[in-house]
Length: 316
Image: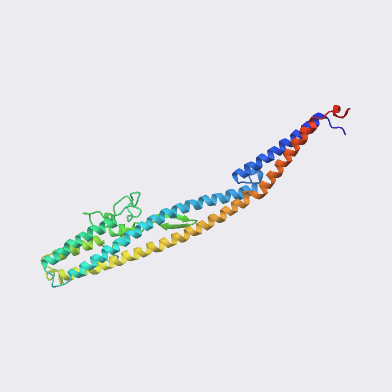
């Protein structure tokens, strides 16, 4: 069978074009790290990789939520740490005020101390986060939880309405939500009397500041002193509430840390699945690229040599 010059040229040109296309594809794969450039290359592998990528994106959103949650809880922890310190000082002053040998002037000093403590505690309970939301207001984050000069009730609501306010929640994993915070009602309101720490402390200060303290009868048969001590017991209950809230925040922080680690492990596994499905075997690709470049070079050299030959080369 005779092969014409035209056929020879066409065959070699087509072969070199195919080699160049294959080399170009390998170079593109090495640049992106992906074995599959379009779904038609491997539909099943592409579907697997896309599913894994979708899962990774979802987990990244959860991790972002967890980062925000951890930041919020850390601020809440600071609030309760500071509140505990102030409450310890209030308890100390309340105990000192019950000393019967104190003069009115001595009690006046304690009254001023308690006023300062009350303002300090209110400032802590009304703290805002970086975005300006009140940490203790739950879903009513734009409203100050314990406004000065108000009714002293949480969000100026009735006890029943205040108890109904919930902490904001956020998605942290598939089918799992966590509360962003604990509300001021849960932390600073006495569960027995439904009075806030600010109302109870203000009442205690007024009792202590009364000139007839401690013997004047105000609520027969209760005297000022007995009423004052009752307020102290109520404040102790609120202190327990603050400590309980502090513990809850600590538990949530540990849970958030655990979920963050679980999500990170799941992301690593999905990245492995995506890599196995569509990722490139660099060693194999580099080897194929080197072989292809040698083959193309050899074809080009052979074609260049043969194309210069003619019958006159063999006539002497």
